[in-house]
Image 1 (cartoon, rainbow, N blue to C red):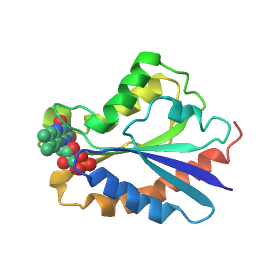
Image 2: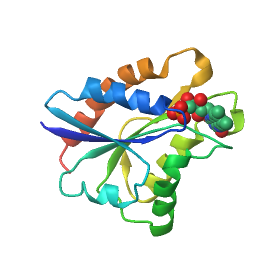
Image 3: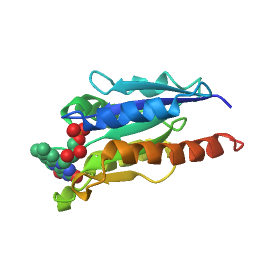
Image 4: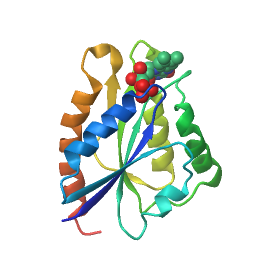
Length: 162
Ligand SMILES: Cc1cc2nc3c(=O)[nH]c(=O)nc-3n(C[C@H](O)[C@H](O)[C@H](O)COP(=O)(O)O)c2cc1C
């Protein structure tokens, strides 16, 4: 079964982008097609474009400020919040990056997108991953392992009758 994955990257200093690049290399094998887009300049229409193709989204984002989405993700996040499009056709996963030293707002970037998309009717596949920069685990290595497991869940979900 052909699967199209669209990775949307929210990053401040490039770690999430590195994770997305590694995941694209690992997932893109002909049967799974991957497109990686930085969130810069995106708005809610990015989800509309996949309506007919049934593509799946992977939100790969870090956390900044006091539990905020990164600056390059802000326009997309705020556009979705303002326009509240129906995203019931969207299936997505979340690979979030953060740091547990920010105990009150750990991984809130991924959490905010997860809650917003779910509130607009989108269906998450798998659990939201919450990477911890102080754990000693390299995020790009965890991303490689996590994405293969997630892809299995995506394939299982897409093979179910609608
Ligand atoms: C100024 C600053 C604020 C941050 N705020 C948070 C936060 O509120 N919650 C959190 O979990 N991580 C926070 N982080 C940690 C980053 O999300 C984490 O280091 C991440 O791996 C950075 O990924 P990026 O390079 O893709 O932006 C913060 C980091 C910095 C430098």
